[in-house]
Amino acid sequence: MALPPAVDRVSRHRVPAAPSRLGAVATLSEIAQQYGPMPQDEADWLSEVVADWQIIADLSFADLVLWRKVDAGFVAIGHCRPSTGPTVHQEEVVGVRAAAGRIGHLDTAFTERQIVVSREPRWDETYAVREEALPVVMKGRVIAVLTREASMAALRSSSRLEINYKGAADDLLRMITRGEFPVRTSVTGPKRGAPRVGDGVMRLDAQGIVTYASPNALSCFHRLGVTGSLLHRALPRVVTSMVSDRGQVNETLAMVTAGRASWRTDVEANGAALSLRAIPVMEHGTRVGAVLLCRDVSDLRRRERELITKDATIREIHHRVKNNLQTVAALLRLQSRRVEAPEAKEALSEAMRRVATIAMVHETLSGTLDELVHFDDLVARAA
Image (cartoon, rainbow, N blue to C red; front, side, top):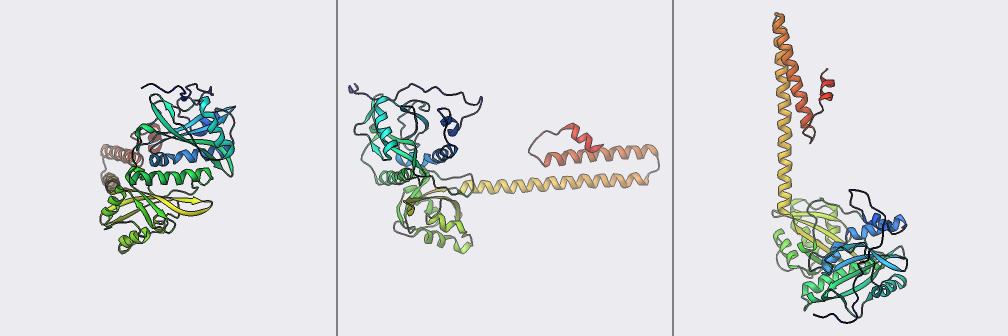
């Protein structure tokens, strides 16, 4: 297919940058600093934005590119591909300078602090790309520009899921333009089993009423024991009714299920376990709703409990081996006191020293994950 005459591609000219640390993956802060000094608070803010932008990319079914203003143009310092749809960038774009035809709307978003939607699609290779440019705001000032880029080749009539996913992404992107995202509160909960967009998504209003639940989210809560539809039901009340009899309601559960705090928590009932994460949707400081991610982690938590049980069993075996070696050493010591022959006493003493050395090596190995023991340290302790 022939391209139209006015083709505006991404320039593949890379901006020269200082070499990064040898053998290490550069962080976003380090990449940004390579193109000129940047205040540390701005670099930290951008790092927090990209730490959570996979959620926005997946909800948008689009690529996200973070641009820093340099000289009279912009250079890409971050890129996130969606896991829910095709990417528009087959090659790495970090370090690439924006083409001349794109600088205009990037600069408008940066200087006028507004969302800029391209009037005409940008052609890349053989397909058209729809692009939006959004200012990244921190404490009332614009520090970068974020573009959302989706392939128009993949566009089709939107389903209810896609409409709600994109609506949730729009809510979070608008928070970025107001300096309200990322939500600067600690995310609690187990590190493993963090929910992702593909695992299940729910949208809540300010009172914690479910306004949308994806099919995967419904399946998760049905495994928990919830029956019927979740639409127009208060999620905190639904979840609390499932676990209250088991005494597992904790202080974070109500906050997460109501969407009041950007936290993580687990809920268990009827042999199933769900990992929940809430992202409050703010509008000028007022909470107007939330995006809730959920994931069925029943098998993961079961395996974790099995590992804990096995670990406790292994520790108990190590303790018993230590006690048995101490018992053998004590028996040898008692026997050496009863014999009178010097040769027998020496043989029993040598046996005691050997058992003591074995016990010391065993104790050292059982108390660490390493499989090696420093010989000099053992000799010093045995001396």
